[in-house]
Length: 363
Image (cartoon, rainbow, N blue to C red; front, side, top):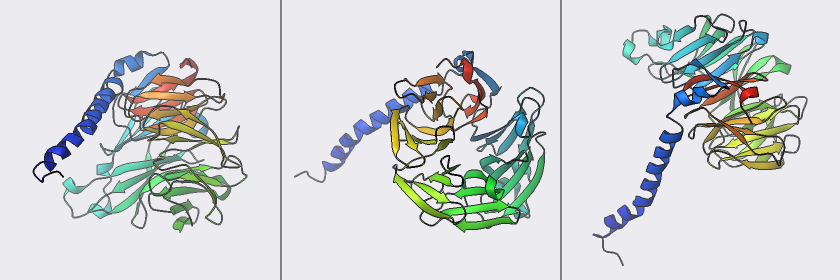
């Protein structure tokens, strides 16, 4: 046996390998992802929208969907508690300091306790950007903001105490409402003409990401981050799970392609993109990509585009099974990507907010 005196030494010996591995991983991330932003912008496909790091979420507003000429992007800087509307064709940005909202929940409290963290963005058909904001105590509520996509003006502030921690946002066109997924199991909010209401999806985990089912006339698909290892199909009228497929946990993203009827899940820990047939929920193929994958979109007629939160690369996963992945360096901590149009991607990370010309990416 091992004496009690020797056990601490043995424990320390066992910890050496994982500690060294973690240190090497952080060094690699710093060397490949979090440094060299000037080199990122040297690529002809990548241009800077704003060099401010720390973008938590980006919402492009195309001109055709209510944006100004050339389009705009609304950026949520969560840690800085700031929203910024930036016209992409040039001109002054509009900056909203969320600590200056003047919420009624803050009245009588010192300004040092006023905090408001943007957590989710969505664009409705009227060209308004919906912004969901977490307000911790002394507010202890959620705030829903509306921003005019053409001008960047803040047009509405709603303090909503009976709401949830928002993780996803989807426009439900058949019912002309927003469906807002929550971090709690099966919890949902519906925001339509009759106002905001809480709802529950029976049999679902937390709705980390929610997309329209590309294989059906009416339906949603959703994945969970940690509580539920299933991809689920949801009947949006009955709010019930109608089918499921095991896909594992730690899924931050989900994207759908109406042209092929396929969906794709970036596996955060597994370092792969899982592509499934939306009609059957059967796996079509699994493609290796970077570790720490989080956001994903589908370029119309092109590849799936996903970004690593850690290694600093944007990965292009082609439709063709035999084709190899393309990749483009964007710098580290890429938390969100979205399409402005079929040829232009907006990305936010450690190197700021960037515009990517997909035709010039070289894959």
